[in-house]
Amino acid sequence: MKNNTDQPQKQEFLFDGINYKILLIGIGVIALGFILMSGGGSNDPNVFNEDVFSFRRIRLAPTTVLIGFGITIYSIFKKSK
Image (cartoon, rainbow, N blue to C red; front, side, top):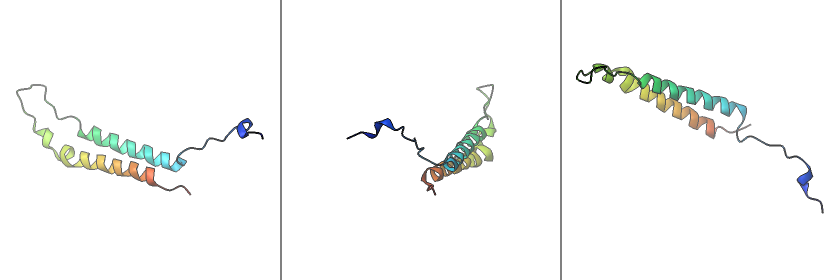
């Protein structure tokens, strides 16, 4: 009996191309959320900057990160055709 080791096996990816594109979009949205969350510091440690409590850092940025995580989870669970 002859083994099938002589034939090169075709390597298959775990996901389709669309899954990887959606995954990259989700990672980009997560990165955008963290960029929105950054800043608000002060050069002088004795001075408090109220920008820490802005709408962008308290509501918008965490919501953007959660949406990005949702997109990446969707890209993992999306069925191939």
